[in-house]
Amino acid sequence: MIKRSETRPINVGGVQIGGQNKVIIQSMTNTKTKDVKATVDQILRLEKVGCEIIRVAILDMEDAKAISQIKKEIHIPIVSDIHFNPDFALEAIRQGTDKVRLNPGNIENPDKIKEIVELCKEKHVPIRIGINAGSLNKKYKHSEEAMIASAKDHLRILEELDFHDIALSFKSSDPLECINVYHLAAKEFPYPLHLGVTEAGGLLNSAIKSSVALGQLLMEGIGDTIRISISDDPVEEVKVAKKLLRTVGLKKDVANLISCPTCGRIQYDMLPIVKEMEEYLETVNKDINVAVMGCPVNGPEEAKRADIGVAGGKDSALLIKKGQIVRSIPQSDIVKVLKEEIEKF
Ligand code: SF4
Image (cartoon, rainbow, N blue to C red; front, side):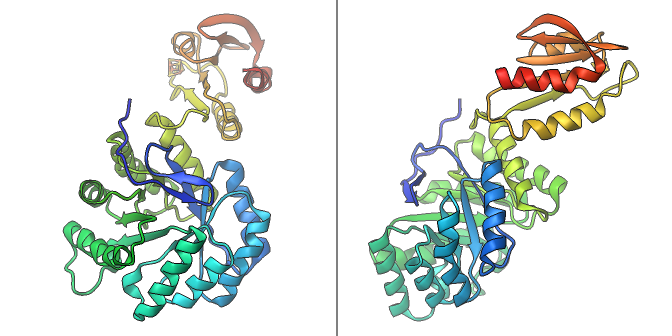
């Protein structure tokens, strides 16, 4: 059982982050935000696979003005990512953004920061300060301690204005650096932590790097929200995030596939079945273990530990439910029968 760190909770458009609330899955669109249709379409696809908060990039006033239109069409909170321009932040907040990702130290005019903070207070909009190892202030030499010091610089500005609805992130492309800096951050700050390995590469690379770093942190109870950065369709980010949270025991409503690696004892063409079931299970929000095994030698024993499973034979396969062999089914019906059983589960 993971003992989660206690952080100061924030409310992002009705979704609670921090405290003992569940770990929230985030992703980021890669459309032009001002292209409302494309952005909404992508967010709806992400919602469907389990994305719980979405971030969009705000590069100009048109992007900021699109927030209210996007919000009308989607069902999850939206975060506006702004780098330097305070007016884009003000506009996004007026347009109803649920959270702003902005580093106050990057905004030169103190009056503008004050204005943003006042508006955030009025509209109950939290701010995420995001420290990236690759873009630290030039006064710092790259180190994990420098990332913490940089966060303190930004935080001081908000705290002096008596603003505390804050989340923090400390991203690095090096998973081990991520682990170290989040350890320091969890000791130092009371605010919720958004976890991520940045610039992590394509699906395979990112899944490995993110699982190593985020997996360890989550198992230590560190982390309130996560994003898996992948150079691909962001839908993949959410799929990996769900599987990671399930693997560490922090998410239950995700189906799990158990399948053997196959060997010389394989009795049938199992791999296409595994592929089809894997895709299907991504749409199943149930706490269920499904096994697909390749032969009647070791297969039945392994499949018995699953809720529903098949162990393939030469012409037919054994259907196993909760440890009991139920019946034999023809090879050609394996996928159909498994889907029916999963529906009923
Ligand atoms: S279940 Fe059978 S086919 Fe699959 S790896 Fe084990 S022995 Fe090989």
